[in-house]
Amino acid sequence: MKAVIQRVKYSSVAYNNCFEEISKGLVVFLGVSQKDTQEDVNYLVKKILNLRIFENEKGKMDRSVLDVNGEILVVSEFTLYAECSYGNRPDFTFAATADYAEELYNHFVEQIKKVIGEKLKTGKFRQHMIVEIHNDGPVTIILESKK
Image (cartoon, rainbow, N blue to C red; front, side, top):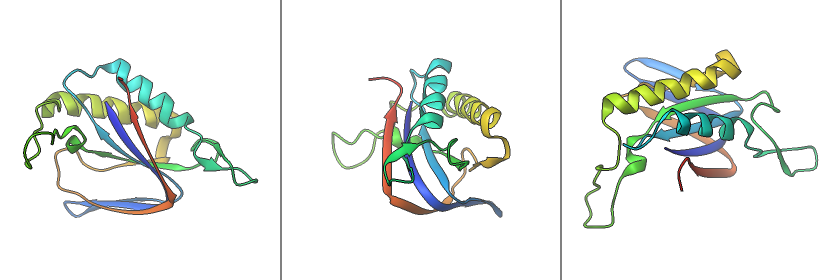
């Protein structure tokens, strides 16, 4: 499982006449591979919630999204598993099937929601989305559940 995390001042996602937005917090682009399991979900949830990438009063990155009472926007992103080593057209062989990816994505969302409740917003799985991001820093972190 891969996650691209961006620290933001504001972000929004629009799809099918729906609109979700957050203020200070994290945008998490989440990709699921064929080999991912619930353990991968649990690992990334814990890591993301406790990732200390917000600044303290001295300007050092020392606070988590929980510490700053921030929000999280989660967006499914199968293209994180694009293989581009051969040729110029991405190959998505390593990405999970849509049904399996949606199952793990939903579990990921549920686990985050258990901790932050209504401070969680999401895009829509299997939908074309327009994402607006006001990256703060910029700060972008890439996490993988497997090495």
